[in-house]
Length: 295
Image 1 (cartoon, rainbow, N blue to C red):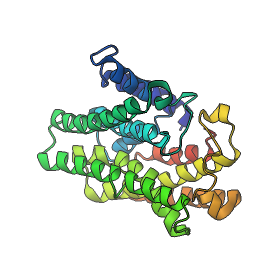
Image 2 (cartoon, rainbow, N blue to C red):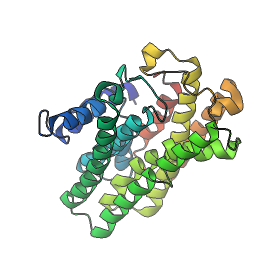
Image 3 (spheres, rainbow, N blue to C red):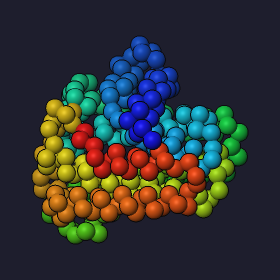
C-alpha cells in the first residue's frame, strides 16, 4: 500500500470537511470564530481523523458515514493543542509553523475558542449518530467514550499528572505510561472506535482495534519525545526542547531505549490487527508512518 498517497488523499478530503463543519468565516461573533478557524485550519497531519476512517473501514463499515465524527475527534485534538500552548501550561510561541492561538488572539480568546471547539465536537458526534440512524444507546456510548477520553480519566488527567511530575512528583515508568496513555493514547482509541460504535460493528472487533490504537498512541508519543530532543524546529513547526525537566520516555530510557520501545510496539500493534478484520493494510502502514515521521 502507498501510505504516502493514502495520507495525501485522505488529508485533502478531511481538510475540506473540517472547514465545512466549522462556523463560517465572518459569522458573528466574528473574532471567536476566526480564532476557532485559525486553531483548526492552520495545518496538521490529521492523523486522528485519518485513523478514524481507516479503522471504520477495517471494521467492515462505511467510513463516509462518519466523517463528521472524524472531524469531531480532530476538533478535540486542536482544542487540546490550544490549551497545551497557554502560558500556564507549556507557554509555547509556535504551533504548526505559526504563532500559537493565544499569541495571535490573546489568552482569553484562546481559552474560549478551545472550549467552543470541544462543545462543537460533542454536537457533531450527536448529529452524526442521528444522521446514520444509530440507536440512542450507540450515540450515548460514542459520546461517553469521547467525554471519558477528554476528562480527568483521559487527556485532562494525563496533563495534570504531567504537570505534577515536572514539579518534582513521582518519576517512574508507570507514571510516564499513565501520562501518555491518557494525554495522547485516549484520543487515538476513541478515534479508532467511534465509527464502529455508531455503525454497529461487532464489539470484539472494536476491542481489537482499540488495543491497536493504544499501541499506536504510544508509538506516536515516543517519537514526539525523540523529536523534542533531536528534531528541527523548522521541520517540526513548533517549539522544541520544551520537555526538559518533564517526565517522558526519553528522559526515562534515553533516545536509543525509547526508539527500541517504539519498534517493539510496532510489532505488537500489527499483531493486534489479526483480530480486527481483513481490511487492515492502512492501519498496519500507519504504525510504520508514525515510527518514521520527522514532524
